[in-house]
Length: 529
Ligand code: CFN
Ligand code: HCA
Image (cartoon, rainbow, N blue to C red; front, top):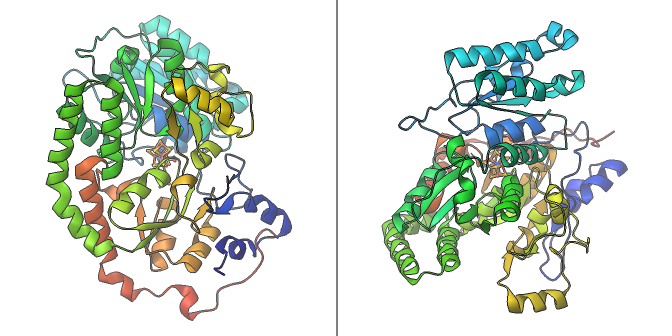
């Protein structure tokens, strides 16, 4: 019988930690309807890779919008350490300014904590207006702001009055929720309430779309736009990579929302469907197969034969351009194995691109994915939820919660399937092979241990564990920042990814590194005592 790596990893935990972590791990068995616990608080003291609510709101969703200024209201570290570390690219175009290379923070000090920070925040807005005169200012709160109770909403309302701008405050204090995920939700709600629906840009064609959950890391969004424009789509707005407030404000005028990252922005997709009737389609522009399928799904949605024909023509052209390169990379990488541990959707999306190159995923997990990201669910487009849009998370979290339509009995499903096109949203587990491993909120100890047991040829994760993995002799690539390379999306991005993997895997350096467990006794003990 094959070894159960989860059991070996769990062995070192004390009873309490064992019980907790056991529920966050599974070995894939397609014969079972497997469940996994996710989106729960990390164990104090364990080296989790997760970030905070502020990171999810300001860093992930709001940060990439280029024509607005986002002020971090809090001590300087939060602003400074979230400055330029996520590789969301943006460029100024025409009259649209680009403020993302700047870091704006109130740099709260002890007297502000004691006597309140609103005066300093107001002063920061005055300075920004004098120096930059943006049309929109966003305020993102960090931990102490919530603790001392600064009324940032009142400051924002006052600034709107005084300067005639849009000013929105987000109470996204880092300690809220259990990870970045709470921050995504807060940012989504703010954009929905204060930005979407306020613009008057009119799309020029009926093939008008928004790309939701595309943050233009390493230029991914630009590659997607290139392909979509070539087919004849009009991209009204992108949420939020290289994004513009003015376009996001008019996004409700588009005819279809594409959802690239499902985790960070599903709330907006659902809310726009309810409020403006804009349908949404889950896409995946990572990997050749994913890209081709997504383009075909889009053409099918619009149902125009001419568009479908143009889609096929572009697919054929693009594939012809990359096939030789992809074949060359595949010949070198075929049969290799990979572990993936990224925040939300990427651990799933990148498995397709790896497969294009013949690489098999043996371990995958999310930092902050919810149960639906792992287990999947069935979504029926065009049927209104019985849940209030605020509670969308509940629909996706409670798998056995029968009162939401997202979980139907087979009979209900069959009945509806006969009338309405059903879209299946596959969670990651269903797309993985039998005997592979899924681990939620993987920690540093577990990463090292799995590496020792499963010996993947490459490990994809982030800056926090990259160098520990690399020092242990395994190629480690950052799937957040792409190690400053990219784009990796679409057709051209796939070849860049293949190139980077070949370069990384075949570097002679690996023969010179000996993992410590090969020739040294490592420190043993029980974790959690
Ligand atoms: S760009 Fe996205 S794709 S938005 Fe999200 S869930 Fe983070 S910042 Mo890092 S790379 Fe990562 Fe995803 Fe969506 Fe990025 S996997 S952790 S919050 N993420
Ligand atoms: C975040 C941003 C991050 C961090 C990346 C990493 C990103 O979660 O706050 O840990 O390497 O993609 O920049 O996910």
